[in-house]
Image (tube, rainbow, N blue to C red):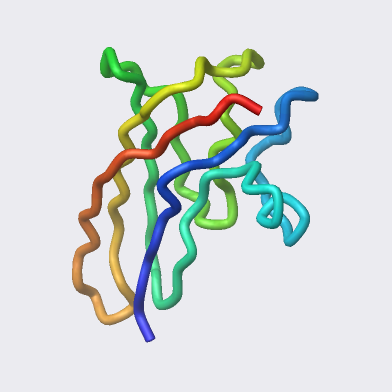
Length: 104
């Protein structure tokens, strides 16, 4: 199976940056925005603010966005994400969408 899905909202941990690595605990609380995927061989995720500034970027599929930028919690609102890379069969991945950062 090859798939990649993203949530449309999350509630970041307000106690400080977590580094973006997620676990079952953070998933239960929807604290990190990340892909749920299978069959991905290369990956890149970028998150943009509403003015077009990159607030997060990663090439590591096991890392997501914790809602922080330079150590500061980002404002609640809608952010744009773009994901790219390739599937294990060599086909390109090009996806985009939006995610709402909710205030806790």
